[in-house]
Image (cartoon, rainbow, N blue to C red; front, side):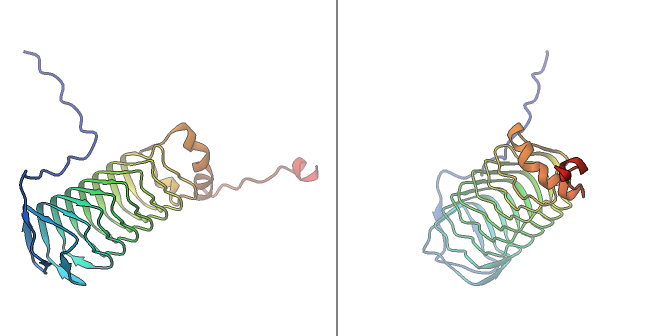
Length: 227
């Protein structure tokens, strides 16, 4: 009996949520563990929390702007229209997490572990992913201007149709990374894009960054200077 070839995984696995969810507590506290709950925008969140664990849950219209959540763990979680701008989520662990139309401007995910994370819509300008480790991260149609991926490890990751102007990929380690449809003007660390795929239309916009990082100067010839 001939076995059919195993289909290669090409996108993040979606959150695995139960069909019925219980109401979330009225306030999120440190060391809280939410499981199989639905939270809305009326949930109170303190300025600094530690050890929060959210599983098999969804959260809509959350106000997490500027909050500091250390040791955050999310597994099988969906965030809809949430504001995480300026939130500090250093060393967070996110597994099968979906962000839809969320504001992630300036979010800090330095050292985070991102497994099967999907960001769809919204914006994440100036997000920090320094030294983060991502496997099957997909970001679609999101402004990511000046996103900082310094020394990040990105595998099976795609930034599709994103605005990556001024993004920093210095000293990144990439494996199977897709940048099709994204604006790459002014990108930093272009020489670290080994292992990435781009479209033909992105070659010329990326060229100045590659030349600058390689230390190559484009200057007129002596004949051109005399003319």
